Length: 176
Image (cartoon, rainbow, N blue to C red):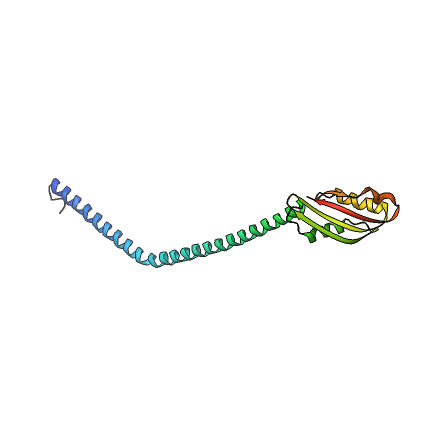
């Protein structure tokens, strides 16, 4: 029957046929998209929730790690400050630490009788009184104190060196 129709009607029917196929294909594609949306929506929502939970978990862990890092940095800063005090022998060095330092420089032939400590603005010093078996032991003790960078000077009166043995001494140690 298509052959019996005039040429312009054949074209019109052919165009109408193509239009109908295009409409059916478009409607079919639309329904496929709607069905795919219904099928994939639960999976998408599930993945969305998992990603959101993972992000919140990651943020919580990062906050915990940053808090631990800041605690570690604070502890490290405290330790560095304490090490600097010990290295430089700063003004924050307590008298017990000064006495321990002086005692650690002691030669075996020296015995201490008393310590005194003075800390006034601009000057810090310790006074040590004691007994030395030999002049060499006392000289070695004074040399050890002078070599320590935390002490400015160790002063001994000259009359201490008159005797060779059994020396009573009084030494003033200036502290940086």
